Image (cartoon, rainbow, N blue to C red; front, side, top):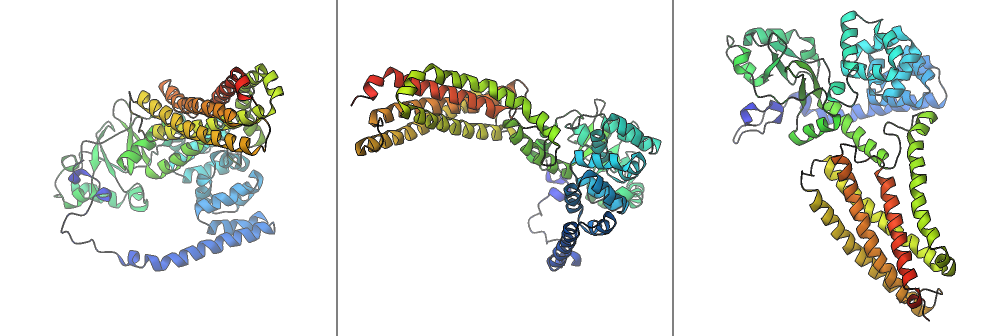
Length: 498
């Protein structure tokens, strides 16, 4: 994007241009940091002290109000939903609404339900529309409907419409609070309008961009503030706006939205429908939360935990999220167990084989996890281009073979050393060599599966993190046991020759 068309916040200073004057408030910012940090820590210490002596909600509420909203949310999450509701009842509505907006959605929704529809409606009206819609979705249809009845009809309709979008889509992320002006206004009229626009003058986020719309609320362009301030008063905003505006659709997945923000350093993106009507705006503060959620969700999904599970989730939610994958793991592990059972006479005759097969399987599993992590990271960052899957897999298999050869050689040396010293009966360099060969094959298989599995799931339009660790473990354990035990069985007369 040419520098003239980039938002002021994203531009580099021109060569030779003098630095912008620093306001006194910013010059003295470092000096004020200490007092701010001190005040915050005092508020947190006060809350901790009150909670330690189990103070009443009436006594705790004023102290929680003194905390920053994220810290106040942590305090409320540490209490039971009933206790949190009692504290919220005694807080100022604005402070309570901010704290609830920063809480885990499921916990905040429970608190709102405990408060009752009328009080919940009062708090939701204060929040940003996207935050309020998220909490309404978490409350359940019946409770949400009761709460909406206590709101003004226009707001209830707006929030109800927002709540219809999928929570993990751009529509679920967007806010309907944004600054816009009609395309027919002049520069003078627009400046006067913005002076009286409460959202523009009081919000740190929504004043960054001014969206220009036509009579049908279709997005016509974005108004850049410097152009507005330097243009002639009689000019139309349609003449000075930036027409080429990047937009997203309401059904775009939130992970793709986050990737767009990361790749192009956006501060906000407008959401439009198929007719290019402006529906809302996704801002950077929401995207930061999504990036964190997606990272933790991928970790949880990869090991078979519930995607939305948190430390504060109920036992029932945790059970429902984890049990299906534990059942799958129980079934898949039978395959590896059946391989060992097939070689039972060998394992019973040579106990050392049982110990070493676990070593080979463990190394294969670790190698597979490494490939899985690298491949999933590449997918998440958009580094995996179409048609590059085969190259990625072949590289990982090559790494698996090389690391397997290295670790296998180490196992050979260990077997030789122990055999020469006579520390453990049945161990010798020949068994170490067989283990080394099995290691090369098993690690190659582990790296192959670790890289191919997430690529395959992505190709099938499935989340690459879903249960990937469980299936990877099944394949690496089975292949490692089969390879090592098969080689030992075939060569046992040579391996265990005195």
